[in-house]
Length: 374
Image: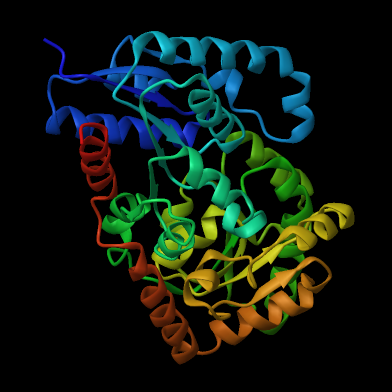
């Protein structure tokens, strides 16, 4: 006999991975649970046929892409809301994906469906729109966050919030101290999206070229997220840039083995911090996008290591400050000084240790089970 039902909603590949891990942990905690919802192939593989794989359609980036698929999302929204009303699960577990999930939480409350609503992996409203937090407090039963500072922010509005730890800790811990750093290797990490690579990689190449003028012994390797990104990066390189090796799919090994690096703003900056890579952060977008982002930002820093540390642990080169000369100067400072690298690596370990000691998905599963069946 089933021991109740939990309904999961995830709309991106990363959320699918997190959801699958949490479902796996829940199956160990409560073997009789049934799982339903929408997610991706990993969640369906672990949770069973009650979970529909919609990731290929749901994982879109950008407002215009969402607008173009409005009919699809409206149809899926109605289907999911009806499924929840019919199944009456003990809890609905929302994983990130705020555009859809926060609207769904509001719809569940509007319909008077008697279920707990649990949010896992907070949307970063604290960075962009803190006014949404009191509204979220009215419709959610529990927020499970992955950054320690989020707990106090949500609890100020009366929303029960628990810090589970960051899932990255388990994933990257085996690499953290297992690779010996090459004192002459510099990592270039221009991001995974095409627009990021197009804006940032030429700047990093130019910085590397300047560094070689001062230190001809230096080696450079750039991490590409896919074969197509590697092709794009190689197409940007001149014959004089052949000193830089483009590697596909081994960004973590590069972070763990290089002496220092330049990292595009995004998830990779937190991963680099956890792996102890002394680095600088680089961010470059169109002027209009940058101005809009600065107007909305409610935090003093862009990089998560700096947000966690509440200070500029790593140098941030943003927009017009992201010049080859400035980046080269900072990386030369690091390559030329073992003590500077060691000091920065120590600070990065200090702030990344705030992310918890591992077991985030299992802790999240325990919190979900406790809240669902309280």
